[in-house]
Length: 312
Length: 279
Image (cartoon, rainbow over all chains, first blue to last red; front, side, top):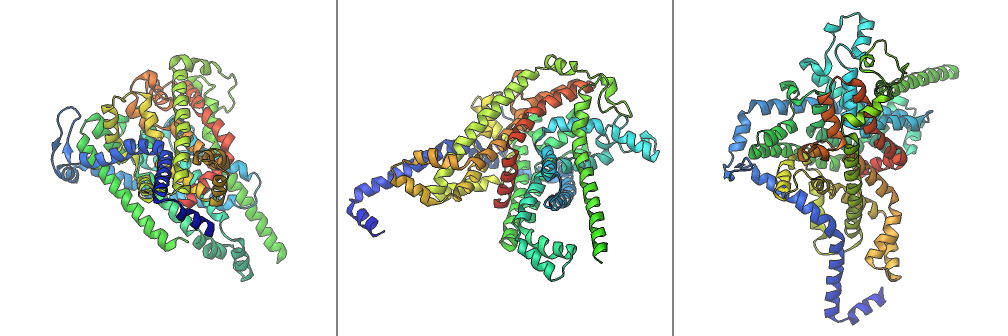
C-alpha cells in the first residue's frame, strides 16, 4: 500500500493523466460495441417516441406539431378505452391465478418427490415452446364442435354441443380462454422463480417453528409467506408488466385472421400496432404508447417502493 | 396417535401425487395431441373418441409441409437470425459488462443508469419510432433490422454484470500484476468463469429470437425473408382446414427449441432463478 503511494507520487502528473485517459479509453472500448447499438436502436427511438406523440404524421407528408391533440383524442376514443379495459381485465385474471398455481407447484416440487426434475422440466417447457404452434393446438383442442374438450364435456354432462362454451370463438368466453392459456403457458417460469425463493429460506426457521409446535399451515403462514415476500413482489410486478405488454397471445389465439379480433379481445398493443401500421397514424399511435409506458412506469415505481419496504 | 398421523401423511402424499400427475398430464396433453395429429389425415384429426396412436401414421405429412410452404427457408432464416443475434448479444454484453463491473471510468454510473432505466420500458412503447428509424436507414424488410433490434439488449448487459459482480476483484488484480491486458483478463479469466451466465443468456436470447412474433411481423413482409413463426402463422391462416399439416409444421417449429432447451436446461432453470432474485 505504502509502496504504491510512493510509486504514484513519483510519477509525473502528465503520465498520470495520460494513464487515466488510457484507462478511460480502454473501458469505453469495452462498452462501445454494445452501447452504440443500444443508443441508436433503443435510446434514440425512445426519445423519438415522446416527440412523435405530439405530432400528426403519416410517414409521407411533413410532420405537423399539434400539441396535446393526440392525447385529447385518446380521452374520447371509446375503442382505445375498450382496449385499455380489456388489458386490465386480462391482467386481473392472469396475475392472481398464475401466482397461486406457480407458488403451489413450487412448494410441491421443493419437497423430496419422485420425478421432481422431470416435472420441473414439463411445467417449464410451455414457456419456451413456440407460441404460434402451441396456440394452434389449443385452438384445435378447444374447437367448439369438433374439439376433444367440448366432446368430453358433452359426454360427461350430456349438455348438447351447441350449448357448451365456444371458448376462443365466443365473445363471452374469449377472455376466460386467453387467461387460461396464458396461465398454462407461463406459470412454469414463475414457478422456477418461486423455487429459487423457497430454496433461499433458512431451514432453521422451519425447525424452530416446528419446535414451537407450529403445524404445516402455520409454518406456511408464518415462515414461508413472510420469507417469500420479496420474491412474491418481484413475480407480481413482472406479471403485471408482461400482461400490459400482451399482444401476440391474443393475435394467435383468436386466429383465423386478426380482423376477427372484435371488441371483446382488443388489447392496448393491438391498438398501437393497428394505428401505426394499418392506419399510418404514427403520432396517435405514439400517444397510446406513451400511455402504455406511463402505466408500466407507475407499476415499476410501486415496485421500487415495495422492495424498499419488503426487501431484505 | 403415531399411526393416525402416519396414515394422514400417506393419504396426503397420495393426494399430492395425484394432483401433480394430473397437472403433468394437463401440461403434456397438448404436445401429445400435436404429435398424434401431425401423423393423421385431416378427417381423422378430430375423430372422437380420439386415437392417440394413429393406426396408419401418415408420415407423408412431414414430407408435404416442406413443399406446401417454404418451411426450409423459414427455418433457415430463423436459425440464421437466432445464431447471429445470440453471438452478438453474448459478445457485446459480456464485453460491456466487464467494464461496468471491473473497470473505473468517467461516466460509468450515468451510462449504467441509462441501461437500467430502459429495462423496464416495454419495447412495444417504442416499436413505432424504431420502425420509422429503421425504414429511414433503408433497413425495412431486411434481416439486418431484426438483428440490430435484438442484439444489443440492456437486459444482457445487466445480467452479465450481475454475474461479474460475484467474481472477486483480486482475481483481476492478480492477472494485471501478471501483465495481462484488460482484454486478456476478459478473454482468459472472465469468459471461462462465466459459463453459467453465458449459457443462460444464450438460451434466453436464442429462444426469444426463435419465438419472436411481433418484430418479424412488423419488419419482414417478403415471404422469402420470413421467420418460422410468421411463416407458420401465414400457413395456418391460408390452409386453416389442413389440420394434419398444421400440426406437422408446428412439431417441426418446436423441435429446435426442444433441443436447445434440453441441452441447456440445467443452466436455464438456474439462470431464471438467479435473474429473478436479483431482479
